Amino acid sequence: MRPLSYVRAGDAGTAIALVRARPDSAFLAGGTTEVDLVRQDVLRPGLLVDINDLPLDLVEDLPGGGLRIGALARMSDVARAPGVIERFPLMSQALVLGASAQLRNMASMGGNLCQRVRCSYFRDPASPCNKREPGSGCAALDGFHRGHAILGVSDHCIATHPSDVAVPLTALDAVVHTSGPAGERAIGIDDFFPLPGDTPQREHPLEHGELITAIEVPGAPVARRSVYLKFRDRQSYEFALASVAAAVRIEDGTVTEVRLALGGVATKPWRARRAEAALLGRPATAASFAEAARQELAAATPRPMNAFKVGLAQRAVVRALSTLTDGEA
Ligand SMILES: Cc1cc2nc3c(=O)[nH]c(=O)nc-3n(C[C@H](O)[C@H](O)[C@H](O)COP(=O)(O)OP(=O)(O)OC[C@H]3O[C@@H](n4cnc5c(N)ncnc54)[C@H](O)[C@@H]3O)c2cc1C
Ligand code: SF4
Image (cartoon, rainbow, N blue to C red):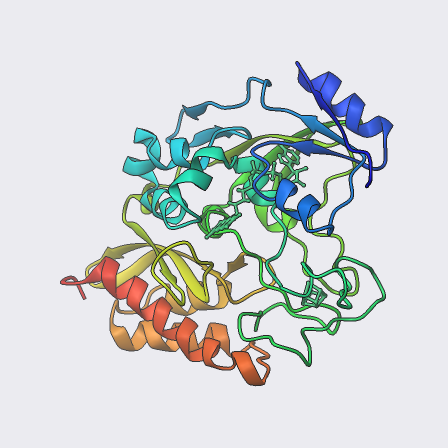
């Protein structure tokens, strides 16, 4: 049996100092990822610093139509915040389609961004896994990889990023605010999730002891007409095989503004910039949507078991855009 200490921090400075002081320590928010992995012997912290007493749970409207979401706001509270439902329906939908009602009541937004991959080899300490044990190999490459990534992969890791809400946050250019030993930082969401490359163990740019304090979403009028679609093996309590966050503005039948991001198919929440560029100025038709999706997925490098995701993701993009433009195109 290994000893595991637990302490409840009353303020951010204390929480950061406590984690900073021990290399084997970690923050504990809702615990829905952290405790699972400790139980499975995948993570072996010596100290958990509970941050649930910190005043970081508000969802606030910002001037200009944006949002500031405290890192400890629960997924369920964010999903039903009026400003999220009215101005960012894609976020509310992504949150409601994640996990289960009980988990959403526990799980925090900061923890959601830092959740670990669902690759079964990562969660099995007996399997080689470069993410869990750098240099040990990747059992998924020639193993069971039906749910794994087709975009942003490397020879060292092909695990998909599991978060749903990170997909609309990526489409919306959200910014992650942190506080740490070096002071405060603001990190663009795209930079928050690095590609695995040859360092798949590095899943975000946070230093040890750096605390996420808030996530800011800039005002985006285009997001009022938006959607999050999630495709999975069963209709609830399941991670995405493919998902799409889409927002679009149409004028005179032409796409004049569009935000697109994909989940379930890439090693990070995937901003579909090629598809966005292909859509701008094009007629809002199923043919344009299909061509844009084709261009985005041209970069895919599927493996034998997950090749079906190429077509699935393309159809998902077309479905999302058609849902938003039905009757206008
Ligand atoms: C059965 C199951 C199904 C799920 N299905 C889905 C799904 O469909 N879609 C989806 O998106 N998610 C899903 N999840 C994941 C769930 O959303 C995450 O576990 C949850 O959001 C993590 O939040 P938490 O507060 O519980 O984090 P914790 O477990 O407390 O922490 C997770 C990690 O984040 C770190 N951390 C937490 N807060 C901070 C902070 N403020 N600053 C820095 N580091 C921090 C912790 O140290 C830890 O490393 C599922 C989880 C389970 C168990
Ligand atoms: S895909 Fe990534 S997480 Fe899964 S076994 Fe390979 S290195 Fe580990």
